[in-house]
Image (cartoon, rainbow, N blue to C red):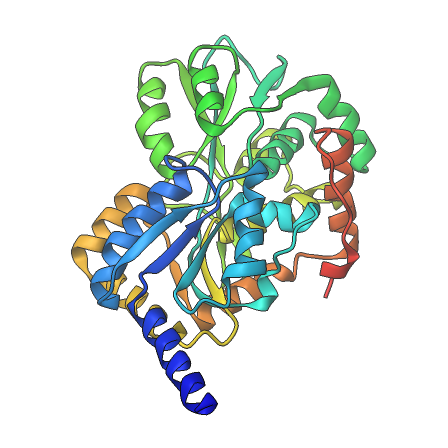
Length: 354
């Protein structure tokens, strides 16, 4: 009788799991860039999964609690998908977090980019103090700005001194607050995703209030090199640096920038499930079909730009490519700059150097 009851219970649990909706876990409150993206993806993905897909928000400080909850509690649920973003990738490098990308199975990612603009003349970012707002996922932008303004330096200490001399980093802002502050003239440099740049900043560029400065370029996952982004007319960071300083950027501080830029942008929108998830192949195939659907593809491109997607093993290959920029010196430099220049508590984690 006991065996019969256990068998009935197992069938009931299995049936319950089968009837449950798929859940996309978004580690931020509704309305954020990742939330909007996940809402679009869920709407189209459910057509090819053949089951409902809902978006569940688990916000918290630096968008860490939602990912931690997936790691600690939710990843064993076969119908839970983690929607990780660039801020999560930065935190993985420098913060105490529970989550670890190596412990999940990949579904898909889209290889993205960020663009940076500054107030138009008479403001000159190379001779006047820069005011830039802090939010999750902005370390690559600050480091690129520091490299551009300060030029070739010997070590991270010199870059920290130059940062302190030329840049004000305003902490405690969310992306919307930072954008509005820039549009009001309280900040003079702003960074945006593709959709926010098109919607909010490009009109001000046409009005002569802002000027596109640079974008970070896109990592070519075949060659491992950063290449020009067809979605933006502005120069890549490397192009802007060479135009200003007459040489390509190099050195330990630049290597740390490349590390955090690669993690932030390649993992800016990525989908993960727990190890050995029985629905993994089904989900990967649903993403492929979604991207082949003209209506779905058009809406995704309109929201996030025309960027390359990597699914399954291709996503794992992409992740392994960016891990090659992770080494002891670059990680130490990133942590030091975060602590001493940005004054954001950061920890050096040698355990991720594997």
